[in-house]
Image (cartoon, rainbow, N blue to C red; front, side, top):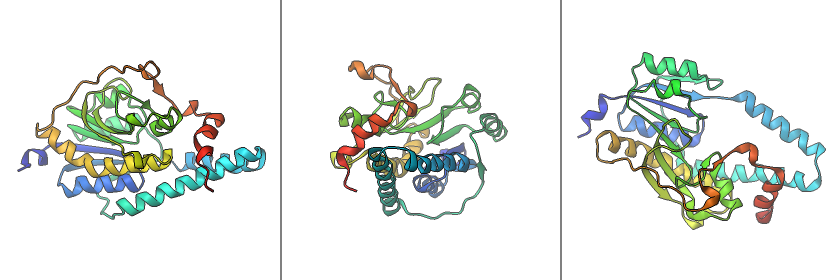
Length: 262
């Protein structure tokens, strides 16, 4: 029924992680033609982040100490949820591990393999050299109901603004903008998912991992058409791109401390 898909050359670019493993396995299970799978591994950044937390534990005030401990515990909870929902194993065939997001190398590999479709999730912003290296569509998974909350860690900003109507997932086409391409598929989050930003992100990840391959299959087989993004009505979300660097300690305290159960 889906023989057309089998002949399409598809690349996957994702970090390492439970949700990404499950997602890649689903593409394998659907017998997609996957000549290129690139996994992003950034141990140096993780080490730097851990060192920063360690230093903070000695240098910061008590409230900020509690914040760091709280975030660590929330991340553990979200990791446990992912393991419960998405535990899987698969043979890692044709996977290339990168220590950093080397876009020149990735563009070269995409051209070498003559990739027609590319599946990304959890990646930095793509430069034009990568976008132009894929002959048809680059798909991306984003954790908000676009066009709202474009950028990084959408869940945090939804809690910051108490704006859960925009929580959920979007699978969309990558263009030259940031999370601005045509939309293929969206699922709103449940109110019961909105416990804290990390748990909401875990539930978003589960929905992406379980639906991504089917959405791509439908798009390639022309059973699912793209829809242009609408223009947000709310002034605070109009063309706004949210960034990790804008998440300050004060904002974290406002979001996390009101639900501190640890």
